[in-house]
Image (cartoon, rainbow, N blue to C red; front, side, top):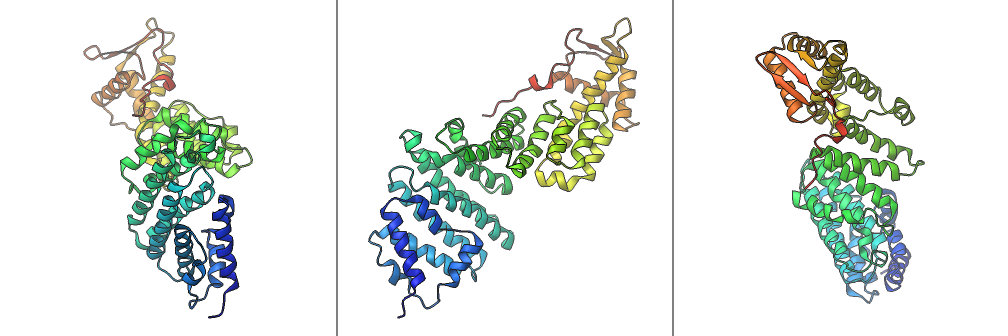
Length: 408
């Protein structure tokens, strides 16, 4: 059999990297991007006996990892996406077992590559089959990896826990994009929160985790918690990562809007957000519910792709009616009892804001009762007298301080 010098050099380099505990070198050898894999695959012939080359690796676990990776590389260009993903899951399982036996964080660079590859491979398999099984498989492997990382009790600076945040972020990412990962997976990911302020954890991991955790909280309707996490991610993300800050800002915009914090137009302009975001701010500020909802409808694909359409549609309605009520109060400020509003005046304003001339008193009263019960407005309703009696001091408390639901 003719020797393949490329394979021989690869195996020799892998053996040296494993024997010297050089995780950085391993991460440059065990690559999962399309171009380097296709390049290496083109140098491996179908007739090559991969066992022959890996037999020179003394450690059985190291030899098995290398063999499975080379099998994966050789088959990748022609294999079906599901078969390729199954091979990658096996490689991840072997690396997780090796990480369990290893001491210290030296294997983390290659584990980071494996974890990211699991998500990308699951996406390819799902695109080919429209089956969420690949995401479930990836989530299972990531969960196993996260358990190993969090189980290291050594100080973070010298432990495997340095890699926990990025794996937790990827778990949250999978659960959000497909709903395939059970809640227990996301629950385990939340256990890594204590590492968010640990300087031993790479900044990029802390940004990624805060971003995906913020998005997770948004879907759970923990708006204030989501705002806190997304604000942290935006603040920590370096300014030269313009695209990343723009992506974060889209979600932070929603969390802030639903907490009554409206962005300055200059910020939206700086990160070139779509015109729809400007229009939403204007409609929200002016209390134009009909136009707000029309803007959402006109840009449905944009907001659905971000996972925000229903959230904005459902959660903004009361807040906009609150702004309308506030304007009615301002128009009534010269009256003898400026804090007491007539139902007829409020109904007329609500009809105009919602472009709903058929809105009746019971519907309007239900909206007012909902705002008062949620403490968005402080006051009382007098049904028989058809009056709204608003608090003289703070009838409209800051939305940011109202209804702060804490995540469990």
